[in-house]
Length: 120
Length: 150
Length: 261
Image (tube, rainbow over all chains, first blue to last red; front, side, top):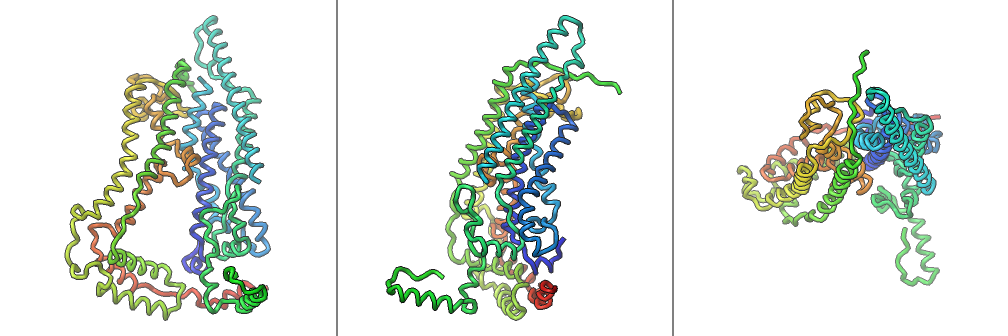
């Protein structure tokens, strides 16, 4: 984590941080409902269902890394040799776990709905 | 870029809807057949009712979810660099083009160069450029069409 | 391991068409309606007279100086600090300097304060009324139906919450009545609203809750019942104890560090 002095030397754009977080949260919200549909169709119950959500959320984060974080990183890679994550997020946990819990309620809703619909 | 994401998402939704319909039909078919069987045979309705989905529907569902996921990620807006120097460099290099959303409008929170104020300070004025612009303006006849934008 | 037999209840498919889907559709439409109602009811902030604005802005100026102190040189910081601290202590920026030292007025009597309260009340009303109405509607029409089964097991404690209105003792707590489907909808429809209305909509519960805290904290700063003189004194103290460290100190070394080959 950055110290206060480092923050002063290389300041951070608050708007960009908010934009990135918002983008990520919106994406996770949308995809969480989608995973609910998938889990409901598959008829998963209890732990496998939550595991399904977790795995697919991580896959989404990986896709974001591959399609959104990576290109900017390659563009900059000769300039600075650190990981590409620091360009868009303060630390890498933000990418991997951000939006995981916001999406959970939407997931449970659509999961229950489609579970009930398919198993009528 | 955008039509790719839209078509991928649409394709995935189509697959998902088909998988959902198949699963529903399958379970409906299965439950009626087991109900008929159990009413004929015996009173064992407990465990046999848990239907297992055919493998092809499961695969279709997982693939559909994955495809929609890819589509949505491709359709999500670009991330922005959070460090001031990278961010300002990006604005300087790309200008408004970097903030064009998919339908050709500039994003509403685009504020332009955040260091614009500095450019108008006396110490930062590019006096040669301004002189050249002025000479150009005089050569063109000096009609006041509005001062050239620096 | 003894396998507990799964309870199965044969439900009429009509339950879906006449209970589940209506509730869901009504919930979504109410959210959209609430969003637009909030947008329509939002009153533009009232114009304040000059001294009140000056009071607020000068306090904000001190706060800004405190947060951005490190980017200006020590001399300029010292000059600004001296000016602000002196002015704060003398109470130059106060709305009415003669009332300095008196107790703050009761917020209930101040008409300007009432205005702010009304705005907050309206926001809460837009939240509460639809909820009460829909709750009553569901209770009147759909109470006592078991409509859906949660796909994950729950402990027995959830039974009273999920099966409100269904007085069956032996039923598995996974089964849900219509009222609990409504509760699930409240929490789960965030993402739908996010998608439909954009992410900063008024329909989402979370934003509402955050909003109650956010503007509350903002209003607290200049709100009624807070003595501005005390705020100025506190800010003056904050400024005078601030340790100033210039960012550009040693910038040459740092620059050379980055270009070293």
